[in-house]
Length: 111
Image (tube, rainbow, N blue to C red; front, side):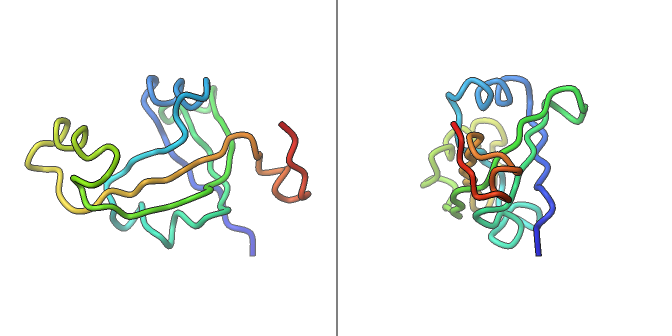
């Protein structure tokens, strides 16, 4: 069974960082939407600039980890942004944009 691509809307700065290759990991608060069941390694993803359809990037989840807030690579940032509302663990989702959804299906890996 092929999994439906995971839709990840992003703010412009984060979308452009993925687009230019300076960002490869998305950080979300761990929970019902962002966990081991929804962020399965090998699942296709669609990164979107906001919720519009104009700018989209496709890729695959290459790794997933659940980290305590202050042990995550972005824990301090989460704390700064959300303060006392930042609770629970962080979902760290590694995404490879070099492998498109079509390449995954054919076994090709063109760079």
